[in-house]
Length: 248
Ligand code: SF4
Ligand code: SF4
Ligand code: SF4
Image (cartoon, rainbow, N blue to C red; front, side):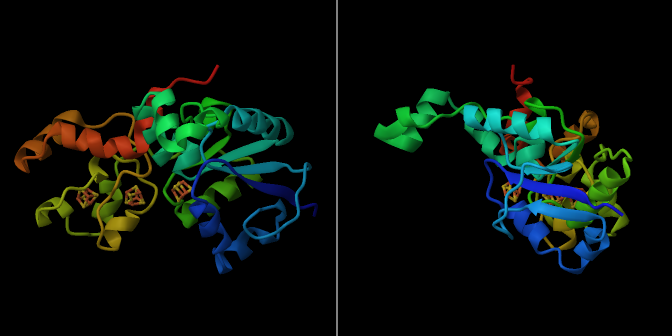
């Protein structure tokens, strides 16, 4: 059987999602029979312009990146955006809190004019995306599920219910009951409440659900004396690119 050629690409990011995939170990065996990896900077030096599936990490933050992702889109039959930087803009979106000129000068000082920069966009805001795997970093069981769906031509929709659902199914004690604030009630599930299972809070890394239960949220905030501004500020960490439309 002819193997599907898969290439991994990175844009603005910390490469933590690539690292997650590179460390997949035995779980990778599940799909290795089906694919031929032709480019993956973190594990091999070969490059290729011939691939069927492009798996893209990182957000689009320069005009050079816009041209590059458009070329990748033209070549790939299927494009998967993986990791929150690619899927929703992620942490890089915090740049969008500032005026572009000011933030560029703050970061690059006297050399600012030499550095190309645009507001941070998620990949789908620049080119059409076929599959999305949010998460900072990606949750590998979901990544494999999406890769298998892509290889079989089946759809995959990122869950649009709150992390709390998975957290309850995992029978975790709620962080709010321990006096700690958690963004699970307004964050998209799909990570199997990964952080809470490991004693941490949810930081909202998978992005906000499209229809948060506002009244329920207000009750929680009032009960635990948390201001809406505080929550908005926390959600700003991953969701800032959401406010941008598609890049024209
Ligand atoms: S989503 Fe998080 S872990 Fe993945 S590349 Fe971006 S910053 Fe790194
Ligand atoms: S710990 Fe967080 S995710 Fe879990 S139920 Fe409580 S608020 Fe929801
Ligand atoms: S629990 Fe929250 S912060 Fe942790 S992986 Fe899931 S969505 Fe991200």
